[in-house]
Length: 447
Image (tube, rainbow, N blue to C red; front, side, top):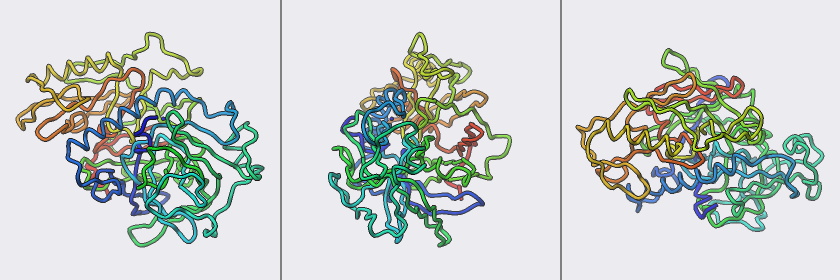
């Protein structure tokens, strides 16, 4: 799942919403944080500034995933609230939702590495500065606090006790080392999405956190909360469940100036011989995250097998060996691989390109002066039963004007398949089937 960049929010998915409905599905537009449409857009940032900030966000997120993925969301904590420790949030995309009746427009991070959806609420006893109005539960006719005695409270906390305040169910979410957190009432409310046809889609009785204490020097005043898209019980995906066939998908575009698509529910386009799928792996001790089995990566004809940094894999629980797997994460920009595996891939890429590398921007390991005549190698990511052929833009990025850099990084412990590697693929998560589907797609042409 902290440093001062903590609530610089990770895949997150900051969504400005326009929704189309296909049966049980509805789609929203994902706006990249660096898009002029995003509230986080800084017109003074250069390309180099944006790339460097993305590197820092990704590295910061990767550093914390290892600790967080081994933490349990269980009854073993001794505080008095529903508690979970989540990923460092990195703003990569944003979601614009409406909350309550009458609806209040709320900008919130959408994060596949977090579960609970929460916003800042009045009265805000200890909150970070927020540009937009705070949500006032007293004004909404559809707001309902969750009683401690309710099945919802008991189900979310499992065997935990003493999570009450004035007989109301409480929550606490912590990010990274816990210096950034949100706490308040667990409640039910109506989420509303505005469709492109002018219709509104209402999702009643969604459990969310009404945050009255939200602290952390890195919380950003332009954001007002978070939409949790992880796999845990508290996530929006899990709550919608059969209403969306326990499925969601997204299609990420290569340009920050064009919206990507995020779809709740089945996607009829996931058919054809070019659709591949691999098994979705769950960690029983940390159900938030989505794991895949990475068997290796090929550079031209040379296949580099997955090699964990650990000489003996650590069993987190029976049947789950954490360092055998890689997180697929929309909230991390770049891809992080075991150090030895990364070194071999870098060596193979150097041999394939066969021109002298240059010293690139800080933190990048392999960079070149870009020339349109350059020949890039064929790179294939080998998940179990799914060989994903990458375009050059999935593994090289413009590190600065006239410079391209490898977008893979070495990591001591956290292995992440980032969102650059996912560009121009329609990717569907089928949670009941425990599969992730990939379809090569021009995401700029998604309806």
